[in-house]
Amino acid sequence: MPDIAVGAIIVAAGSSGRMLGTDKLFAEIAGRPLLAHTIAAFERCDAIQRIVVVLSAQNVERGRDLISDHDLAKVRAVCEGGSRRQDSVRRGLEALGRCDYVAVHDGARPLVTRELIERGIAAACEAAAAVAAVPLADTIKEANSDGTIQCTLDRRRLYAAQTPQVFRYDILLRAHREISDDVTDDAAMLEALGVPVKLFDGDRRNIKVTMAADLGLAEALIAGVVNLN
Image (cartoon, rainbow, N blue to C red):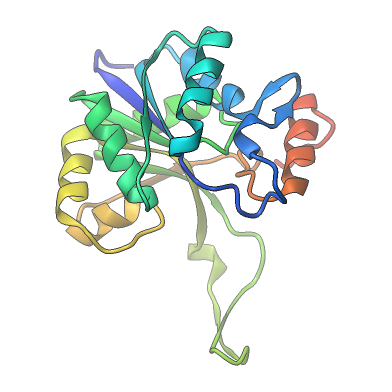
């Protein structure tokens, strides 16, 4: 790994609206809160020098307590997110401060590994912008508003994007300053600027916990009871 400064932004400012009243970030899986698993992977990665965690206003203090309780020493700041994911990332960038590269990761992906993070950093060092992704296995149909199929897409060219997504800091900051349209990930902002974004091998175990049932799956994956690869 080259001698570069790399920071990480853990984005976890959502509302857990599909979790049936459970705050997924602090739900316990395999003996500790989900968010602690996520941050710990970046803590263990030697290439990551500092971390910023972005939380909803009601979770900022609880997040700080979690970080203290689990001795997550690379976390330099916990900040309040914005109304959109991209607003939260922008606040994370500002709190992180200038570095060479930044890894942006969903707080609700607790099975991220050091190896996956390192692959992303290596890919970004080559291409300036890199996104973890896995090929789609299912046949994908495009339909109109009434559910009628319009066409079958060529799945050989289709991928499910994950995080971490790793970027040169200056390019990502520029994208957040210039792109105001709603997007679902940071890569889309760079695409809008015409910046090439490279895919690198993701991990099917790197699930995003969005529903209550996903907590059980995440625990089974951590325990090795289930293998999605």
